[in-house]
Image (cartoon, rainbow, N blue to C red; front, side, top):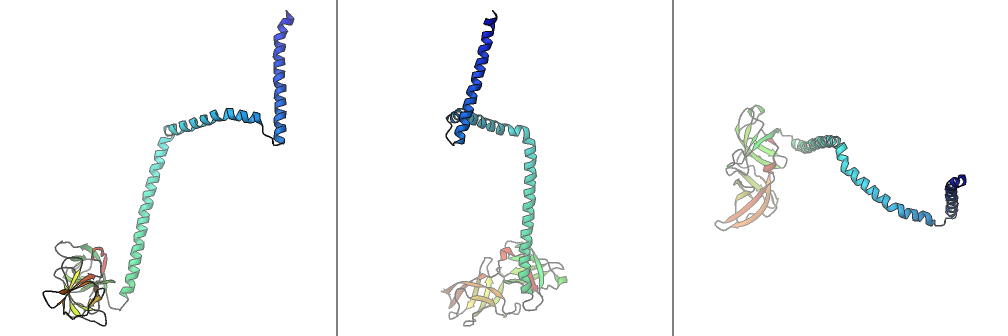
Length: 275
């Protein structure tokens, strides 16, 4: 009876011993092949069996983590996103302010050279409104009689002639722009070979008409038109604009000339008044 009871235990010990010996032999064989740089078929086989399920398990774990991340961290992420949005808005505001400061600096730097150009006094004024009445091309500026502005004071920018003051209060002045249909200014072709004289008039459009030229007047496209000084309001030599087109007037013996103003009336921000 005792020998029969011992035999199963002995078989178990022998089985364990056999596995230990086989494991040792396989380990020695594996190390020997690695030392020689030879391919290990056992290791490759194990990898081939284990790798696919391990990779699949990793993908499932990654997908599950991505799906459940919001459940555990959603509130913190939302707060962080809101803070980032607020910071971006703040930086955009600062950037816009810096761009505006740079634009103003560049404009004032250019205007400074214009103010010092001929030594004549010039009163700087901001444009308050443009075309307050759509039927008239006028400006309202931020200087008035207490600043030395008077009716018929000439208004300019560094680019050229804007128009003349027609109404004044102590703190503001209304300006009739060159493009208004009631505006007119004595004009001359600046080119030395010509010096033809006429009158530039507005018609509430973006261009001026140069009238009063004879059929023999020497004028051509791209000629610069300046004030002639005739008429007693505008001083001589202020730039008015550039000739866009020259046509023969079929009804009269003369020429019809369209002039593009040098000043961009739609984007005026600051002007200068010649007292």
